[in-house]
Length: 267
Image (tube, rainbow, N blue to C red; front, side):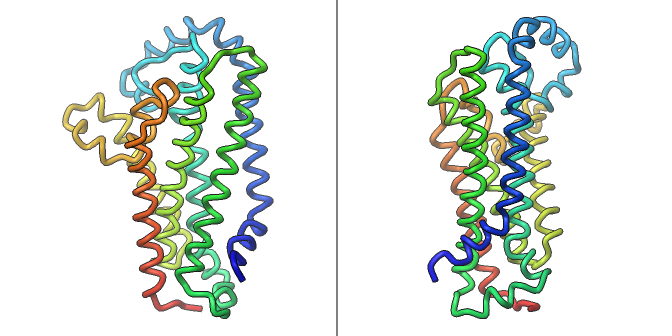
């Protein structure tokens, strides 16, 4: 039956998705509650942060900090570090267990005991990943909009939407990588490890490259470069960068389908 695997997966993950949604709601709401106070004392915070070593500043939001605008606040406090971290943790955890988790628990044989082709199972698991990640993205966007209205700040909603879409696609790319590793190896831990290592590598490469001359040419190898380097909250969504992230996702999905079709399964 159409989308059986997709809806069953969403049913199985509904409590986890609800918990993540509540967590993102709480964190974002807390940030917005403190925004008026931080804005008023922004120059003091900026002076403190700018006194930090350049390398440390690069790790947590770049070489410039601006609390005088809502865009600068959201970039520094959420979009440069916290939001990507949360979306990657969720998506990698989801992707790594989508197929490999079923295999480890011994339920993959039930999944494949029907006439359902293997490629279809992978695509429906991927569909559940897409829906879940974008549900979190919508929750994040909605709470930010409500918070911005509450503190009476002025922001371009189109650019805000583009920034949230970008971080959602970044999470989707890494989640699909974890799915592909899980399909190839059948081990949830390996999917978690590989995708997490590439996530850390990507973040550090993008953060440190502007400060280390010999790293700069390699910055384009980081998915984080295509997420944040064009600053979508200030400049709007960069179409080319978004296409690159979506292209990575498609490549990882193609790998997942191919290796799962060919692998001997221990079920």
